[in-house]
Structure formats: C-alpha cells, structure tokens
Length: 345
Image (cartoon, rainbow, N blue to C red; front, side, top):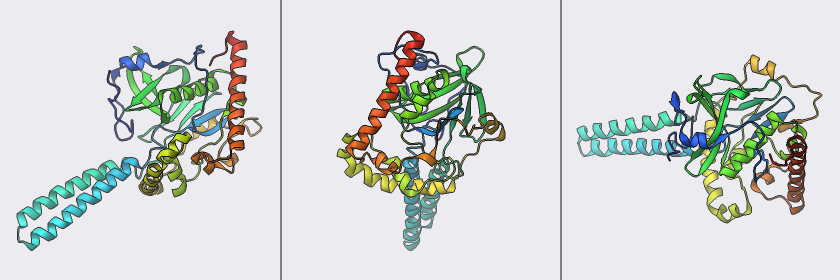
C-alpha cells in the first residue's frame, strides 16, 4: 500500500495528482460527514484555527507549521553550489585549465538555479493557504496553491486522511460525476499522527453538522495570529519548535537550535510572501455578525500564548485549559447522546 505518491509538502513542492481514481487507502480512510459512533470521542482543534465564529472557521494549510524546513535545504544547497562554482573559477583559472573551469561553473550554476527554482515554491508566494468552512452556507472556500479561490458545496467534497511518511493531514477531493475520479484536491490542518488528524476532523464535522459552536469554541485555546499580519521571526521559531508534550523537552537540545536556524529562511520567505486575501464573493458570504456570541481570533488570544506554544505554563494554568476542554467535550457528547441516542462524536 503506497501512501507516498505526492510526497511530504503535498500540493506545495509536489503538485496534487489529479484526474485519477481514488486510491484504495483513500477509500479505506474516508471521513464521513454524518454522525458516526466511535470508540474515541475526543475532539480537538489541534491548534489549526485562524478564525472561529458562528458563520465560519478558517483553518491553516498542512504546510504552514513546517514552512522553512525545505527553504533551509534548498537555500543552503544553492549557496554551496554557488560557492563551489566560484572556487572552481578561481582555482582552474589559476592553474590555466579554462575548459574545466567553464564546465564546473556551468554545472554549479545550473544546480544552483535548480535549487533556487524549488526555493521559489516557498518564497514570493503566500504566507499561508487557508481553508474556510462556511457553516452558514454549507460551503468550503479554498485558497489554492495556484492562488485561485474555489467555493465548494460541503456535501460534495470527499474528505479522507492523507499519510506522508510518518504523519497525517486532512485532504479534500473534488470528484467527477462517477464519484471516484479525483478532479481537484486541497489539504488542511496541522500534520500530526493519525489520532490527532481524526480529532481535528471530528472538530470540523461537529462545527458543520451539529449545534455545538459554543462548546467547540471552549476547546480552542489560541488562534494563529496570521490573518492580517506577517509573522515575526520569534513566532516562526515557536511554530517550528512547538512542544506537544513534556517528552519533546527531552529532545529540546536538538529541536530548539534547529528551529532557530530554520527560522531564518522561514522568516525571509514570509517577508517575501503576501498575505492571502479572500475575494469579495467569499467575504460577502462569510460576513460576520458582530453580535454573535462566539468569536475567536488573534485579537482575543491569551497573554501567555508563547508559553502555551512551548508548554511552559504553570500547572494551574495548564489544568485550567485541560479542564475547560474536557468539560466542552463532555457537553458535546451529551448533546450528541440526546440527538442520536449515543455519546460519541
């Protein structure tokens, strides 16, 4: 079973493979939109939310948190090839081997340009590529990697899990009339393990299908502060080094220094990119009612957002967050139990 057909940076460095039949694993991992009783009823936003209100939720693309890692590789490789070519020019000119100098310089230049071409997949593009789940109109608005915006009926999108090496993300397919040929694709949500991707799907499914917006809002601790401004260097480092559990701190001597280094090409890339802007059609459809009770965005993030990202909050603060989330999940399951005669998401 091959789940690696499109590579790690799916859709960004490696284009989606379209005009093909659904893979067997995509059928096996299909994510239904309707209620399904499951053994695990956990719901989580998985820190993937940019905005959340009664009308829509905006979710990050799957490449956002890893942005900069590929840039480090391609930028570093480009510099190495340029340096190697310059050294060859000086050395072979000095020893009067002009043909070898020309050959080495040409090879180095071509390889450097090739690395630069891959680098441009990350730089001079968009800071992120959001997906908006429009609850009011039952639509999914997608800011695609080719900078076009599409709006799709929620019920017409085929959702499934996508595995890249050891991590998963959520992916939506637009199918042809035969319901098995993929015509377009988009991926969203942070990359994580299978269980984490499934909890994020339950969060989105509940938002679109159930009357749980207030409870779901209690699960969200932070929203990503990237909708209206470019991220700082520090925020980029925090995204790259985000601690998921205390176990991560065991490897912090490796994670944090690498994140500090990787944060540099990430920051440069972000500064060259533009913030994505929704078109008037999407903005009109998603126009937010200022009187709505539920509204989560960067403007009401907690003051300790940096401590949250590094998992260095006080024990009391951490317990406060966990207790609030557990209560919200319990309340959701009670609602579902009353509606469906069960208690699972």
